[in-house]
Length: 466
Ligand code: C2O
Ligand code: CU
Image (cartoon, rainbow, N blue to C red; front, side):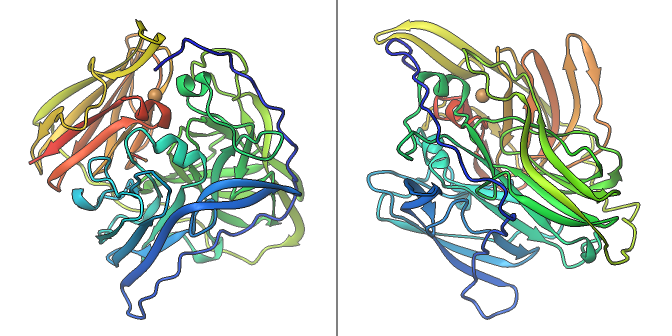
Protein backbone atom coordinates (compact mmCIF):
# COMPACT_ATOMS: atom_id res chain seq x y z
CA UNK A 1 0.00 0.00 0.00
CA UNK A 2 1.42 3.35 -0.99
CA UNK A 3 1.62 5.95 1.76
CA UNK A 4 3.87 8.33 -0.08
CA UNK A 5 1.70 11.13 -1.34
CA UNK A 6 -0.97 13.42 -0.05
CA UNK A 7 -2.44 14.30 3.27
CA UNK A 8 -5.81 13.16 4.54
CA UNK A 9 -8.34 15.87 3.96
CA UNK A 10 -11.43 15.52 6.08
CA UNK A 11 -14.65 16.63 4.48
CA UNK A 12 -17.19 18.71 6.33
CA UNK A 13 -20.01 16.23 6.84
CA UNK A 14 -23.53 17.59 6.46
CA UNK A 15 -25.85 16.98 9.41
CA UNK A 16 -28.20 14.03 9.09
CA UNK A 17 -31.82 14.18 10.28
CA UNK A 18 -32.31 12.32 13.56
CA UNK A 19 -35.17 11.13 15.72
CA UNK A 20 -37.45 9.37 13.23
CA UNK A 21 -39.11 6.13 14.36
CA UNK A 22 -36.84 3.12 13.81
CA UNK A 23 -37.83 1.49 10.56
CA UNK A 24 -38.14 -2.20 9.95
CA UNK A 25 -35.96 -3.19 7.03
CA UNK A 26 -37.83 -4.70 4.07
CA UNK A 27 -37.72 -8.50 3.69
CA UNK A 28 -36.54 -10.20 0.50
CA UNK A 29 -39.64 -11.89 -0.92
CA UNK A 30 -39.48 -15.51 -2.03
CA UNK A 31 -40.99 -16.24 -5.43
CA UNK A 32 -41.60 -19.87 -4.50
CA UNK A 33 -45.07 -20.84 -3.27
CA UNK A 34 -43.73 -24.12 -1.93
CA UNK A 35 -43.20 -24.52 1.83
CA UNK A 36 -39.53 -25.02 2.69
CA UNK A 37 -38.27 -23.45 -0.53
CA UNK A 38 -36.88 -19.91 -0.66
CA UNK A 39 -36.12 -18.55 -4.11
CA UNK A 40 -35.23 -14.96 -4.82
CA UNK A 41 -33.01 -12.58 -6.71
CA UNK A 42 -30.46 -10.05 -5.53
CA UNK A 43 -29.13 -7.52 -8.00
CA UNK A 44 -26.13 -5.39 -7.10
CA UNK A 45 -26.20 -2.13 -9.04
CA UNK A 46 -25.51 1.58 -8.75
CA UNK A 47 -28.43 3.42 -7.12
CA UNK A 48 -29.14 6.72 -5.52
CA UNK A 49 -30.49 7.61 -2.11
CA UNK A 50 -30.83 10.66 0.09
CA UNK A 51 -29.47 10.73 3.64
CA UNK A 52 -29.82 14.50 3.93
CA UNK A 53 -32.90 16.19 2.44
CA UNK A 54 -31.98 17.85 -0.83
CA UNK A 55 -28.75 15.90 -1.34
CA UNK A 56 -28.55 12.88 -3.62
CA UNK A 57 -26.00 10.23 -2.68
CA UNK A 58 -24.86 7.78 -5.36
CA UNK A 59 -24.47 4.38 -3.73
CA UNK A 60 -24.25 0.71 -4.60
CA UNK A 61 -27.29 -1.27 -3.55
CA UNK A 62 -28.83 -4.71 -3.49
CA UNK A 63 -32.27 -4.43 -5.09
CA UNK A 64 -32.02 -0.65 -4.88
CA UNK A 65 -31.70 -0.24 -1.11
CA UNK A 66 -29.04 -0.04 1.58
CA UNK A 67 -28.82 -1.93 3.87
CA UNK A 68 -29.99 -4.65 1.49
CA UNK A 69 -33.28 -6.49 2.04
CA UNK A 70 -33.36 -8.84 5.04
CA UNK A 71 -33.31 -12.49 4.05
CA UNK A 72 -35.36 -14.57 6.44
CA UNK A 73 -35.55 -18.35 6.12
CA UNK A 74 -36.07 -21.39 8.35
CA UNK A 75 -33.56 -24.07 9.23
CA UNK A 76 -33.65 -26.79 6.58
CA UNK A 77 -35.16 -24.54 3.87
CA UNK A 78 -33.83 -25.00 0.36
CA UNK A 79 -32.44 -21.56 -0.40
CA UNK A 80 -31.65 -20.52 -3.93
CA UNK A 81 -30.68 -16.91 -4.64
CA UNK A 82 -29.76 -15.66 -8.06
CA UNK A 83 -27.18 -12.91 -7.88
CA UNK A 84 -26.98 -10.51 -10.79
CA UNK A 85 -23.86 -8.39 -10.92
CA UNK A 86 -24.79 -5.06 -12.51
CA UNK A 87 -21.82 -3.17 -11.09
CA UNK A 88 -20.09 -1.49 -14.02
CA UNK A 89 -16.58 -2.89 -14.53
CA UNK A 90 -16.37 -4.65 -11.19
CA UNK A 91 -16.33 -8.28 -10.22
CA UNK A 92 -18.39 -9.16 -7.19
CA UNK A 93 -19.76 -12.16 -5.27
CA UNK A 94 -22.19 -12.71 -2.45
CA UNK A 95 -20.68 -14.26 0.64
CA UNK A 96 -23.10 -15.68 3.22
CA UNK A 97 -21.14 -14.58 6.27
CA UNK A 98 -21.22 -17.21 9.01
CA UNK A 99 -23.45 -19.74 7.28
CA UNK A 100 -21.92 -23.18 6.77
CA UNK A 101 -22.72 -23.46 3.04
CA UNK A 102 -20.84 -25.67 0.51
CA UNK A 103 -17.51 -24.13 -0.53
CA UNK A 104 -18.59 -23.53 -4.14
CA UNK A 105 -21.70 -21.63 -2.93
CA UNK A 106 -19.77 -19.46 -0.47
CA UNK A 107 -19.11 -16.42 -2.66
CA UNK A 108 -15.35 -16.76 -2.18
CA UNK A 109 -12.98 -14.35 -3.95
CA UNK A 110 -11.67 -17.41 -5.85
CA UNK A 111 -14.98 -17.64 -7.76
CA UNK A 112 -15.90 -14.08 -8.76
CA UNK A 113 -19.02 -13.14 -10.70
CA UNK A 114 -18.02 -10.92 -13.64
CA UNK A 115 -19.81 -7.66 -14.50
CA UNK A 116 -23.12 -8.42 -16.25
CA UNK A 117 -22.89 -12.08 -15.27
CA UNK A 118 -25.05 -13.89 -12.76
CA UNK A 119 -24.79 -16.84 -10.45
CA UNK A 120 -27.34 -18.83 -8.49
CA UNK A 121 -26.21 -19.71 -4.99
CA UNK A 122 -27.96 -22.75 -3.47
CA UNK A 123 -27.69 -24.14 0.05
CA UNK A 124 -29.69 -25.39 3.02
CA UNK A 125 -29.06 -23.79 6.41
CA UNK A 126 -28.78 -26.95 8.53
CA UNK A 127 -30.79 -27.85 11.61
CA UNK A 128 -29.26 -26.06 14.58
CA UNK A 129 -28.01 -23.13 12.50
CA UNK A 130 -30.74 -20.65 13.54
CA UNK A 131 -29.05 -17.31 14.12
CA UNK A 132 -28.18 -13.86 12.84
CA UNK A 133 -25.93 -13.86 9.79
CA UNK A 134 -25.31 -11.44 6.96
CA UNK A 135 -24.38 -11.22 3.32
CA UNK A 136 -21.90 -9.00 1.55
CA UNK A 137 -19.63 -8.96 -1.54
CA UNK A 138 -16.22 -10.64 -1.36
CA UNK A 139 -14.26 -9.93 -4.59
CA UNK A 140 -10.54 -9.71 -3.91
CA UNK A 141 -9.32 -6.14 -3.53
CA UNK A 142 -12.80 -4.61 -3.94
CA UNK A 143 -14.71 -5.81 -0.88
CA UNK A 144 -14.13 -2.71 1.25
CA UNK A 145 -15.34 -0.18 -1.32
CA UNK A 146 -18.37 -2.26 -2.34
CA UNK A 147 -19.46 -2.66 1.29
CA UNK A 148 -19.02 0.96 2.36
CA UNK A 149 -20.85 2.08 -0.75
CA UNK A 150 -23.87 0.14 0.43
CA UNK A 151 -23.70 -3.58 -0.30
CA UNK A 152 -24.53 -5.49 2.90
CA UNK A 153 -27.66 -7.03 4.38
CA UNK A 154 -28.85 -9.25 7.23
CA UNK A 155 -29.60 -12.96 6.82
CA UNK A 156 -31.75 -14.47 9.54
CA UNK A 157 -32.16 -18.20 9.98
CA UNK A 158 -35.10 -19.01 12.23
CA UNK A 159 -35.95 -22.19 14.12
CA UNK A 160 -39.46 -23.59 14.22
CA UNK A 161 -38.86 -24.53 17.88
CA UNK A 162 -37.27 -21.24 18.96
CA UNK A 163 -37.13 -21.19 22.80
CA UNK A 164 -37.38 -17.38 23.05
CA UNK A 165 -41.03 -16.43 23.68
CA UNK A 166 -42.63 -14.94 20.57
CA UNK A 167 -44.15 -12.14 22.68
CA UNK A 168 -40.64 -10.67 23.08
CA UNK A 169 -40.81 -9.63 19.43
CA UNK A 170 -37.71 -9.73 17.26
CA UNK A 171 -36.13 -6.39 16.42
CA UNK A 172 -33.09 -6.18 14.20
CA UNK A 173 -30.49 -3.40 14.40
CA UNK A 174 -28.10 -3.30 11.45
CA UNK A 175 -25.21 -0.93 12.14
CA UNK A 176 -23.46 0.67 9.19
CA UNK A 177 -21.47 3.84 9.02
CA UNK A 178 -21.36 6.67 6.63
CA UNK A 179 -19.13 9.53 5.56
CA UNK A 180 -20.67 12.16 3.31
CA UNK A 181 -18.88 14.88 1.42
CA UNK A 182 -20.42 18.36 1.56
CA UNK A 183 -22.21 17.65 -1.76
CA UNK A 184 -23.74 14.45 -0.43
CA UNK A 185 -21.47 12.02 -2.28
CA UNK A 186 -19.39 9.27 -0.68
CA UNK A 187 -15.76 10.41 -0.78
CA UNK A 188 -12.92 8.12 -1.89
CA UNK A 189 -10.98 6.44 0.89
CA UNK A 190 -7.89 8.18 2.24
CA UNK A 191 -4.55 6.65 3.23
CA UNK A 192 -5.75 6.67 6.83
CA UNK A 193 -8.82 4.69 5.74
CA UNK A 194 -6.65 2.05 4.11
CA UNK A 195 -4.46 1.77 7.19
CA UNK A 196 -7.18 1.69 9.81
CA UNK A 197 -10.14 0.59 7.79
CA UNK A 198 -12.70 3.16 6.74
CA UNK A 199 -14.76 4.55 9.61
CA UNK A 200 -17.54 6.98 8.79
CA UNK A 201 -18.69 10.11 10.59
CA UNK A 202 -22.19 8.80 11.26
CA UNK A 203 -23.23 5.44 12.68
CA UNK A 204 -26.56 4.40 11.20
CA UNK A 205 -29.06 1.90 12.60
CA UNK A 206 -31.13 0.34 9.80
CA UNK A 207 -29.86 3.19 7.63
CA UNK A 208 -31.06 5.92 10.03
CA UNK A 209 -29.22 8.33 12.31
CA UNK A 210 -30.26 8.00 15.96
CA UNK A 211 -33.76 6.63 15.31
CA UNK A 212 -36.32 6.17 18.08
CA UNK A 213 -37.69 2.86 19.28
CA UNK A 214 -40.74 2.89 21.54
CA UNK A 215 -41.22 0.10 24.09
CA UNK A 216 -43.60 -0.52 27.00
CA UNK A 217 -42.46 -0.33 30.59
CA UNK A 218 -41.71 -3.73 32.10
CA UNK A 219 -41.77 -5.62 28.81
CA UNK A 220 -39.13 -8.04 27.54
CA UNK A 221 -37.85 -7.33 24.03
CA UNK A 222 -35.57 -9.41 21.85
CA UNK A 223 -32.95 -7.47 19.87
CA UNK A 224 -30.48 -8.70 17.26
CA UNK A 225 -27.42 -6.53 16.61
CA UNK A 226 -25.25 -6.80 13.49
CA UNK A 227 -22.09 -4.79 12.98
CA UNK A 228 -21.99 -4.41 9.19
CA UNK A 229 -19.41 -1.60 9.18
CA UNK A 230 -16.07 -1.95 7.41
CA UNK A 231 -13.96 -1.20 10.43
CA UNK A 232 -15.80 0.32 13.37
CA UNK A 233 -15.61 -1.33 16.78
CA UNK A 234 -18.85 -0.89 18.72
CA UNK A 235 -18.69 -0.95 22.50
CA UNK A 236 -22.16 0.05 23.66
CA UNK A 237 -24.28 0.57 26.76
CA UNK A 238 -28.00 0.96 27.27
CA UNK A 239 -28.19 2.45 30.75
CA UNK A 240 -31.65 2.14 32.30
CA UNK A 241 -32.39 -1.27 30.76
CA UNK A 242 -31.53 -4.72 32.07
CA UNK A 243 -29.80 -6.63 29.34
CA UNK A 244 -29.44 -10.39 29.09
CA UNK A 245 -27.16 -11.88 26.47
CA UNK A 246 -28.86 -14.76 24.68
CA UNK A 247 -26.96 -15.26 21.44
CA UNK A 248 -23.90 -14.42 19.37
CA UNK A 249 -22.69 -14.98 15.78
CA UNK A 250 -24.00 -18.49 15.33
CA UNK A 251 -27.27 -18.32 17.27
CA UNK A 252 -28.32 -18.88 20.87
CA UNK A 253 -26.01 -19.45 23.82
CA UNK A 254 -26.43 -22.50 26.06
CA UNK A 255 -27.85 -20.41 28.87
CA UNK A 256 -28.76 -16.72 29.12
CA UNK A 257 -26.12 -14.43 30.62
CA UNK A 258 -27.88 -11.82 32.77
CA UNK A 259 -26.76 -8.29 33.65
CA UNK A 260 -24.68 -7.50 30.62
CA UNK A 261 -23.66 -3.90 31.25
CA UNK A 262 -21.89 -3.47 27.94
CA UNK A 263 -22.14 -4.92 24.47
CA UNK A 264 -19.10 -5.39 22.25
CA UNK A 265 -19.26 -5.94 18.50
CA UNK A 266 -16.10 -5.97 16.42
CA UNK A 267 -16.67 -5.52 12.68
CA UNK A 268 -18.87 -8.42 11.41
CA UNK A 269 -19.87 -9.69 14.87
CA UNK A 270 -23.48 -10.21 15.98
CA UNK A 271 -25.25 -10.37 19.33
CA UNK A 272 -28.72 -11.29 20.48
CA UNK A 273 -30.05 -9.81 23.71
CA UNK A 274 -33.24 -9.61 25.72
CA UNK A 275 -33.81 -6.14 27.14
CA UNK A 276 -36.23 -5.10 29.84
CA UNK A 277 -37.09 -1.51 30.69
CA UNK A 278 -38.10 -0.96 34.30
CA UNK A 279 -38.93 2.74 34.31
CA UNK A 280 -40.70 4.98 31.84
CA UNK A 281 -38.54 7.66 30.23
CA UNK A 282 -35.94 8.04 27.51
CA UNK A 283 -32.63 6.23 27.27
CA UNK A 284 -29.87 5.81 24.73
CA UNK A 285 -27.90 3.06 23.13
CA UNK A 286 -24.60 4.88 23.51
CA UNK A 287 -20.97 4.28 22.55
CA UNK A 288 -18.57 3.68 25.43
CA UNK A 289 -15.45 4.32 23.37
CA UNK A 290 -12.86 1.71 22.50
CA UNK A 291 -9.14 1.84 21.84
CA UNK A 292 -8.45 -0.45 18.90
CA UNK A 293 -4.99 0.85 18.10
CA UNK A 294 -5.89 3.70 15.79
CA UNK A 295 -3.13 5.07 13.55
CA UNK A 296 -3.04 8.80 12.94
CA UNK A 297 -5.29 11.68 14.08
CA UNK A 298 -9.07 11.95 14.38
CA UNK A 299 -9.70 8.84 16.45
CA UNK A 300 -13.34 8.10 15.59
CA UNK A 301 -14.49 5.59 18.16
CA UNK A 302 -14.98 7.89 21.13
CA UNK A 303 -17.48 7.55 23.95
CA UNK A 304 -20.82 9.29 24.34
CA UNK A 305 -22.38 9.05 20.88
CA UNK A 306 -26.07 8.16 20.88
CA UNK A 307 -26.85 5.58 18.22
CA UNK A 308 -30.47 4.84 19.08
CA UNK A 309 -33.02 6.40 21.44
CA UNK A 310 -35.40 4.18 23.38
CA UNK A 311 -38.62 5.75 24.58
CA UNK A 312 -40.22 3.73 27.38
CA UNK A 313 -43.93 4.42 27.57
CA UNK A 314 -45.98 4.31 30.79
CA UNK A 315 -48.43 1.74 29.47
CA UNK A 316 -47.68 -1.65 30.86
CA UNK A 317 -46.83 -4.21 28.21
CA UNK A 318 -48.68 -7.52 27.92
CA UNK A 319 -47.83 -10.18 30.46
CA UNK A 320 -45.03 -12.34 29.10
CA UNK A 321 -43.50 -15.69 30.04
CA UNK A 322 -40.00 -15.58 31.56
CA UNK A 323 -36.90 -16.39 29.54
CA UNK A 324 -36.11 -20.14 29.75
CA UNK A 325 -33.04 -21.07 31.80
CA UNK A 326 -31.56 -23.29 29.08
CA UNK A 327 -31.60 -22.20 25.47
CA UNK A 328 -29.92 -25.04 23.57
CA UNK A 329 -26.98 -27.43 23.88
CA UNK A 330 -23.72 -26.47 22.17
CA UNK A 331 -21.78 -29.58 21.11
CA UNK A 332 -18.45 -30.47 22.61
CA UNK A 333 -15.96 -30.89 19.76
CA UNK A 334 -13.53 -33.07 21.74
CA UNK A 335 -9.74 -32.85 21.66
CA UNK A 336 -7.98 -31.41 18.59
CA UNK A 337 -6.01 -33.67 16.23
CA UNK A 338 -3.79 -30.79 15.07
CA UNK A 339 -2.78 -27.33 16.23
CA UNK A 340 -2.09 -24.54 13.76
CA UNK A 341 -0.67 -21.11 14.39
CA UNK A 342 -1.48 -17.91 12.49
CA UNK A 343 0.57 -14.79 13.22
CA UNK A 344 -0.88 -11.43 12.17
CA UNK A 345 1.63 -8.64 11.53
CA UNK A 346 1.78 -5.22 9.94
CA UNK A 347 4.92 -4.18 8.10
CA UNK A 348 6.26 -0.88 6.86
CA UNK A 349 8.77 -0.79 4.04
CA UNK A 350 10.11 1.49 1.34
CA UNK A 351 8.49 0.67 -2.00
CA UNK A 352 8.60 2.22 -5.44
CA UNK A 353 5.83 4.69 -4.58
CA UNK A 354 7.11 5.60 -1.10
CA UNK A 355 6.32 4.02 2.25
CA UNK A 356 4.25 0.86 1.92
CA UNK A 357 2.28 -0.87 4.59
CA UNK A 358 1.66 -4.60 4.52
CA UNK A 359 -0.95 -6.64 6.36
CA UNK A 360 0.29 -10.20 6.63
CA UNK A 361 -0.63 -13.61 8.04
CA UNK A 362 2.39 -15.84 8.74
CA UNK A 363 4.55 -13.40 6.83
CA UNK A 364 2.57 -13.48 3.58
CA UNK A 365 -0.12 -11.45 1.88
CA UNK A 366 -3.04 -13.35 0.29
CA UNK A 367 -2.45 -14.90 -3.08
CA UNK A 368 -5.32 -16.30 -5.10
CA UNK A 369 -3.33 -19.29 -6.38
CA UNK A 370 -1.69 -20.26 -3.13
CA UNK A 371 -3.13 -22.77 -0.66
CA UNK A 372 -1.87 -21.78 2.78
CA UNK A 373 -3.24 -24.67 4.81
CA UNK A 374 -4.50 -28.14 3.90
CA UNK A 375 -7.01 -29.56 6.32
CA UNK A 376 -9.15 -32.69 6.56
CA UNK A 377 -12.93 -32.64 6.61
CA UNK A 378 -14.25 -33.86 9.96
CA UNK A 379 -10.98 -33.26 11.82
CA UNK A 380 -11.02 -31.22 15.04
CA UNK A 381 -8.36 -28.49 14.99
CA UNK A 382 -7.04 -25.94 17.44
CA UNK A 383 -6.19 -22.65 15.76
CA UNK A 384 -4.00 -20.18 17.54
CA UNK A 385 -4.42 -16.64 16.23
CA UNK A 386 -1.57 -14.44 17.43
CA UNK A 387 -1.88 -10.72 16.82
CA UNK A 388 1.64 -9.28 16.87
CA UNK A 389 0.60 -6.03 15.23
CA UNK A 390 -0.23 -2.55 16.53
CA UNK A 391 -3.96 -2.70 15.78
CA UNK A 392 -6.75 -5.04 16.77
CA UNK A 393 -7.68 -7.44 13.95
CA UNK A 394 -11.08 -9.19 14.00
CA UNK A 395 -10.47 -12.75 12.75
CA UNK A 396 -13.10 -14.46 10.58
CA UNK A 397 -13.20 -18.01 9.20
CA UNK A 398 -15.47 -19.28 6.42
CA UNK A 399 -17.22 -22.64 6.26
CA UNK A 400 -17.83 -23.44 9.89
CA UNK A 401 -18.36 -22.00 13.33
CA UNK A 402 -15.78 -22.14 16.09
CA UNK A 403 -15.66 -22.06 19.87
CA UNK A 404 -13.25 -19.84 21.76
CA UNK A 405 -11.06 -21.95 24.05
CA UNK A 406 -9.00 -19.21 25.69
CA UNK A 407 -7.35 -15.85 25.20
CA UNK A 408 -3.80 -15.04 26.20
CA UNK A 409 -2.39 -11.60 26.73
CA UNK A 410 0.88 -10.68 28.49
CA UNK A 411 1.20 -14.25 29.75
CA UNK A 412 -2.25 -14.22 31.32
CA UNK A 413 -4.72 -16.84 30.09
CA UNK A 414 -8.47 -16.30 30.38
CA UNK A 415 -11.23 -18.76 29.54
CA UNK A 416 -14.53 -17.50 28.12
CA UNK A 417 -17.32 -17.06 30.66
CA UNK A 418 -19.80 -18.96 28.45
CA UNK A 419 -19.92 -21.15 25.36
CA UNK A 420 -20.98 -19.69 22.04
CA UNK A 421 -20.73 -20.51 18.35
CA UNK A 422 -18.66 -17.82 16.66
CA UNK A 423 -17.42 -17.05 13.18
CA UNK A 424 -15.67 -13.77 13.97
CA UNK A 425 -13.60 -12.87 17.01
CA UNK A 426 -11.61 -9.75 17.77
CA UNK A 427 -7.94 -10.44 18.46
CA UNK A 428 -6.51 -7.49 20.34
CA UNK A 429 -3.02 -6.26 19.57
CA UNK A 430 -0.54 -8.41 21.49
CA UNK A 431 -3.18 -11.04 22.18
CA UNK A 432 -3.41 -14.71 21.17
CA UNK A 433 -6.86 -16.28 20.83
CA UNK A 434 -7.21 -20.08 20.66
CA UNK A 435 -10.26 -21.50 18.92
CA UNK A 436 -11.53 -25.02 18.35
CA UNK A 437 -13.19 -25.95 15.06
CA UNK A 438 -14.09 -28.66 12.61
CA UNK A 439 -14.71 -28.13 8.91
CA UNK A 440 -17.24 -30.67 7.66
CA UNK A 441 -17.49 -29.62 4.02
CA UNK A 442 -14.62 -29.94 1.51
CA UNK A 443 -13.29 -27.12 -0.65
CA UNK A 444 -11.43 -23.83 -0.42
CA UNK A 445 -12.21 -21.58 2.57
CA UNK A 446 -10.97 -18.16 3.49
CA UNK A 447 -9.78 -16.84 6.83
CA UNK A 448 -9.02 -13.17 7.21
CA UNK A 449 -9.16 -9.95 9.13
CA UNK A 450 -12.67 -8.47 8.87
CA UNK A 451 -11.43 -4.91 8.72
CA UNK A 452 -12.30 -5.03 5.05
CA UNK A 453 -9.45 -2.78 3.91
CA UNK A 454 -6.99 -5.14 5.63
CA UNK A 455 -8.61 -8.10 3.91
CA UNK A 456 -8.29 -6.33 0.55
CA UNK A 457 -4.64 -5.54 1.26
CA UNK A 458 -3.88 -9.22 1.83
CA UNK A 459 -4.56 -10.09 5.49
CA UNK A 460 -6.26 -13.27 4.31
CA UNK A 461 -5.36 -16.89 3.71
CA UNK A 462 -6.85 -19.96 2.10
CA UNK A 463 -7.43 -23.30 3.77
CA UNK A 464 -8.28 -26.17 1.48
CA UNK A 465 -10.45 -28.75 3.17
CA UNK A 466 -10.03 -32.22 1.65
CU1 C2O B 1 -17.76 -11.41 6.10
CU2 C2O B 1 -14.78 -13.48 4.33
O1 C2O B 1 -16.24 -12.40 5.19
CU1 CU C 1 -7.09 -6.06 10.35
